[in-house]
Image (cartoon, rainbow over all chains, first blue to last red; front, side):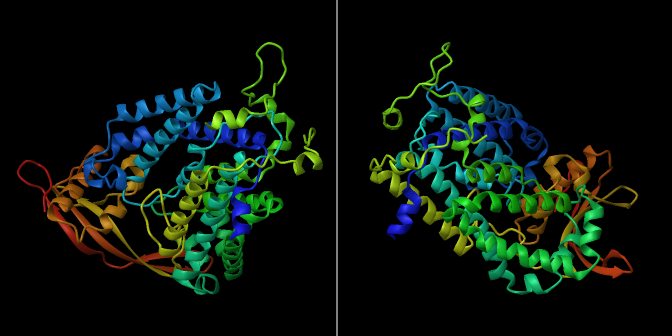
Length: 301
Length: 165
């Protein structure tokens, strides 16, 4: 239990938290603005509306104007966060907008996982301190949001593998399961790379190798929480799997990939990030990046 | 790219300020909830059990499809994948239509009729069918062989042009 505690609440550089936080804010904003939520709200008839539990009070899709308002609010919240104007409230607002539009996408009867990982890993950030980009001293105060996020990612992939084993057993690997899934193709039909599908389904062997590899990889993904050095490797393999899934089934795992890389890399070591993310202590005009030791604690209050 | 790395001494001098107990409780609770949902297979989106591609796929599948019927009795597949975003996942609500209330069945039929009419089709009846398909390997190709669809719910047009049950 103590080891688990040390894992979850160990120190991380505030600089890393600042970078990951900024990346999440940018990714959420782009997702909220660029997703097809207005079209979904405008074209989903009442008879096909199946809202998630927290929108169950609605009988139909909210008006397009409401969706557009959520998108505008998300942009304003993003600008506020980067300008350090009530950043915590700004992040909560942005997250609520993201939850709302993602729920609209989900409210069509099928459980969609496109945005689930990003929504869950950002929950700790709702209460996270606003960290200083210039501060490289690892601190327990800035470690827990990152470590909780890594644990959530690890659990998500682990449970994906766990349920394959629980629901289908070894048959998931030893049958032509993957070969069949690819041969059936996406439903509803969407564009995919038929050449790759033909290649994978031509013989029984590629499908079984993919199946065995996928389950082993997903069950072993708990290492993402425990072994920081393995994170980039795991993220690279997962990205390959997601891209293959997109090419073969037309499924959108973009947010999974973004989240993976934000949490996988030791961003605090990369100087180039300074060009994109400004320190809250930087003094305008003198080109310097300031530092204040009590910054993190002060903002946590 | 990796200049200004923190030194080992810096890393060792990590600031070990104590965390508020509420922070620890918050993180632990969140992780426990995610684990409970994962192990038990609960679904309360966005909390999910992450059952991604978990069911082994064989050579037979059952799915639900809708067809619309025009005044001449011609059947046209609903083909929701060619319609607007709001219709693309219509198969999932269709799959629960057999056990649904009459009102819910009527609402679903009306939704399908509206989508088909928006696509320029004449609709006097909506039928939701259960379709059994078989995947067959012929030479280098895969072929999907369909059995005769089984009618689950038929919604004829009422006198106002809407579809009912």
